[in-house]
Amino acid sequence: MDKFVIKGGVPLEGEVQLSGAKNASLPIMAASLLTDGKCIIQGVPDVTDVKTMARILEFLGAKISFEKDRVEISPPKRPHFEAPYEFVKKMRASYYVLGPLIAKFKKARVSLPGGCAIGTRPVDLHLKGLQELGCNIDIVHGYIEASCQKLRGKHIYLAGPKGSSVGATINVMSAATLSSDTTVIEGAACEPEVVDCANFLKCMGAKIDDAGSPLIKIKGVKRLKGCSYRIIPDRIEAGTFAFAAAATNGDVKIKGGRVEHLQSVLDKLKEAGVKIKRIPGGIRVSSGRAKTPINISVAPYPGFPTDLQAQAMAMLTKVKGISIVTETIFENRFMQVPELIRLGADISIEGNSAIIKGKKRLEGAPVMASDLRASAALVIAGLIANGETSVSRIYHLDRGYESLEKKLGNLGAKIERVAE
Image (cartoon, rainbow, N blue to C red; front, side):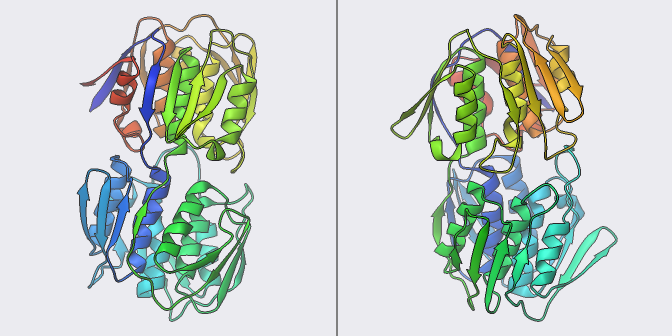
């Protein structure tokens, strides 16, 4: 396994180019199963989650080739219908193949998912939506076994107790493209990744209206065609670099960053005293030493994303005063806190809130990553700590960030990947 060794205290300066959105790439790759033609998807990041999805699609019978950030996918002629546990345990997003398999081939056997240990993320909304479309579903020996004779459009209420579900919205929307009649998804997730997947489906010939709103309409068609499509830039990577720039008192131009995808994040950075400027093709983030404590409560889009609360917390560890970060979606998403405390942070947990008392100094120390976004938070903390910090188990980070150490190095960070 590899680890990062970081020598902190260097402001980040310069330009960084965002990769394509990992959280859009995965469902779009899975949705390529819906067509008989070849799909060319551009802007796909070189991260392990993408490689895992590629292996799943190949196991199902698809042919896949990569060239830099471009992937070509030819759907299976004689498909397998099973996504086995050995793949799915590595990545929760593996279940994105469920809807396309059912819609195209009328049956599927998909292992219940794995992924980061940040809390329970049940698939009940996925199953509810697919059952409403006419699927027969059973859970057998840890697998979802689904079949149908014909999918029929229906009005489906898909919000859960914690709000909308991105995964369920995309799975049901993808399946509904090949259903009869019209499907209406009420309580749909509004995230940019949902819109990107909808735009890819429309590029293949699907008829979808109002993606990005809580009420999506899908009129089923008989077949979809292959297409060429480019993924949106990764808003979570953009936010990670924004918090890293702010934490290190740096000045960074984030090329590809879209203000409209990050408004809640940028508003909080501005509230903390960070300067944000829209520039041609991106966003500029610059920060002096004096910042103001803030309170953050995560929420479904367009609220503050849960995938950026750990990175925000890392920045706030050195902001004078008391800041509060409240997690409302996942019950185990403060796993970065014990490791930040090892670096000298003053953080206490009360219920689903973290109270951060900013300190003048963090001190470098060995820390261990526990999940994808916690990994990024520890890297940011290492960038602002005095001395040397080593971050182990960065395979978590490699799931969702492409060449992070190289991009940070180009901004002046002293960071190196070494074998443990």
